[in-house]
Image 1 (cartoon, one colour):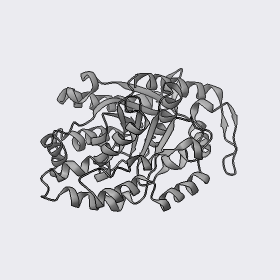
Image 2 (cartoon, helix red, strand yellow):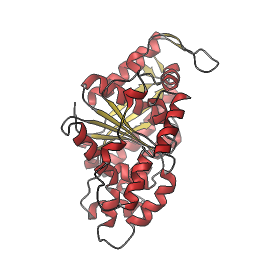
Image 3 (cartoon, helix red, strand yellow):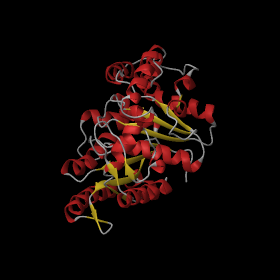
Length: 337
């Protein structure tokens, strides 16, 4: 298991389970490796932060407090807007010890909280990075997140830190910064046509592969110009599949087949964009009530037991068989990191 890779969870499509997967992988990595694990919320909705901070309700209240104190990714970007071309020296101040706010979590899990202001800041980031002076303005600005993570890693122990970045579907400026900060990408897909098209979008938006528009080409060309490595694709997840006899149903298998075909086509065009020049697919079954309960309570997968749980005015049942199936799939994914 690699301990110094920075993984971005991203797909150019929403609703594929990126946020819940980021929470599960972050808590599982922290528990299993027993080394500091940093989860970065790079989505303006900040849903991952709410889960980590205690789940629905209380997590939202705690996030609002952090936003008010500007102890969020948005708060850090505020300081970089004022000082765009060099670190501030206060990067570790934005690292939240998650266990202090949510006792369900492992003691070595840390959060860089999300912030709705990312949307507004995105416009400013584009403006500053587009300036002609200094000559490396684009590189400096697109290094903000990477520099933050490097400084936080030094604070925690540079050689032994897991990092997971939950990305927004859009390829806005803050997603570009996430891609520069990451070494690897995990791409979750759901069983639908838009997920299949999203594979092509990822290749085009990130790498400028086939049919890329002007703005897309600018990102990959700029990264190359400044010698900034783009992350490699670690795996494509066939997420939320409905399974029978431990296999995806025919309808799901057919759509996942299209996703695999498109991924293989991208690999044929650009094999070096994949880890080991190969495509890795992972089947992740439908989590059923698992996601609802874990998200509502801010509860890691490893702590979840079969039974009924109170979620608002309902009592969802977590059954042992789907819980075991989901846990086994997550286990295989974690082992591959």
